Image 1 (cartoon, rainbow, N blue to C red):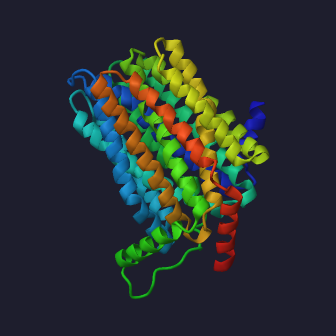
Image 2: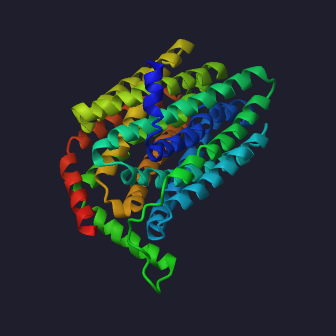
Image 3: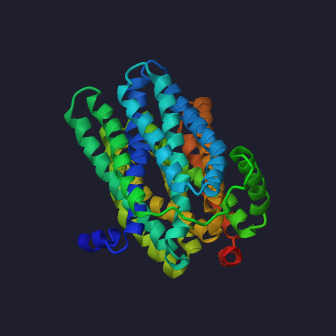
Length: 431
């Protein structure tokens, strides 16, 4: 069984797709070790020990919101320049370097360095987010529409596998080495891992030549602003795409908050660091087969139905997390999250990609990224406010369930087939 899964994930016959998926192996290390598992707990238990009460949790939520806000502001400019200059790969590598350097800087943070730690986390998140825009925008260029759900799911599956392997290695380091040496080395390992798995994408994926070039005699800043204005006006003409973005903004608010706040929420309730990181590690490996499973469900039952299943399950997770008390509770919830997290994100990405015109994929994916980031701003910020106001984060976690329910209601109004037809028509006109 494991041999079949391994051959499915690594397709030697199509190195373009495999190389694209391998980048997810690299950047997922940042998502798991930095955003989700080790850094939040390290921040609360080591770096921010001088802060009283629930302030470390609240400040982490505020910093996460700031990071996502800055990423959202930069997103449309990144996407537009990537299309105008036909430089998706170059910009991806640039932001990967920014994120990697900031991540390595975390290895030097110790007790009392909470301000600098939050600053590096913000810069690293900007690097991560900027690279993801260009990475996602390559998807409609490397596969046909009939393979887009499966390929997107494969990317997430490999990401879970890679992120899980490195997180497992880092967990061994933390348990084996005394003091803060283990977490510090783990931060540096993320930086190196991220860079290594960027290399196949650089080597095997060609820069897409689709896209409207920069007009002669017009500077890049002016040309960028003109294209942004055009895209802002045009995206509203893509009715189904626009409705999907709104639905995605709502339900991804809950998904993003679960990812960013789960570890620090568990830490505040008394779950030890070993149990927190161990459970989140298990989430990664559970996510590998279930991400692939959701790709198959989307192919057979439709992408929207697959997404309904994932969001319904997320609603139950959020409600169950209110009763979190024992270590085994956290492990159970981690398994439940692993069953749907990759699937929900993969199907969301492939649904959007199927409705995007190829010639302006980076620009349109910048709006996808904006929708994702503004959802991430609202979630952690509300989480922090409710926690600080009530003195309990249980009320904050309960509020997450509403985002999944409202998101599904809006999603019902999206006509995916109509959106795909619109994108196909634009693609034919631009050939």
